[in-house]
Image (cartoon, rainbow, N blue to C red):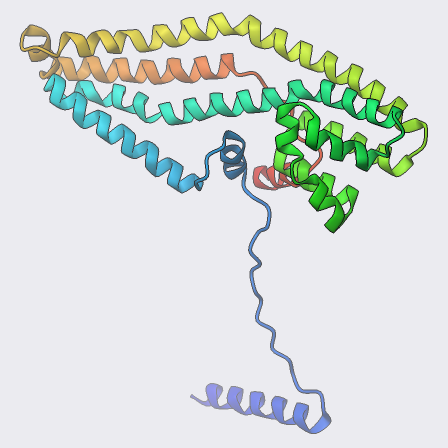
Length: 299
């Protein structure tokens, strides 16, 4: 009690001296600023064209898997058999939107060589780089028209370089990052060097896209075969247990439980191995805020 009273007196004297001397103590409450940068998961959803948050997406996937579980249980009469197929159905939304995201990024990447040629043609006709970008938004390749639709308005409000930065963050793609950074450099340098830089960029981008296409084509057949081998046994199991009989009775027994558990574990391990071996490592972003955020999250 004596210690508490002494502490109170000390605090009172501290504030009294501050008032008398004109140096009133200022107590600042630390406020946690809301992060303006989006997470990698939200960026992934934005690139896939999904207007939901990561939590909403996970909840929707779980709901789809739950519906599949109840339907398969009612169909086969064996909840144990329905678990693994239902988990596969729950993973379908991610697989679908992953493919949709990949297609969107490929369309944007594949459009850059033609888009850069349009910009070079506009500059050769006597236009400035901002005017060439405005023309790209109006008459360029369809994916780039969509990406640069807001550029004319943003360039008037913010300036050319900030407008390009906004477009870069919306695309959030390593190839687009390099192209836009070169466009920023060309705008800042100006003069005849602009055309030379863009022509070199067309060659480099075309070469990179050709290599990516060859890698994707080489691995497509193996991906299809591996996923078919993983899915077909479970489809056969569901077909065998639809009707009453020895198969359904067996998978209701302890022996059937053991078989399904072991098979499920092997399927999970096999699926992880397939995903790891079939993964095409995308180029990491080294320009842009999301690249910085990714490094912070890993650390």
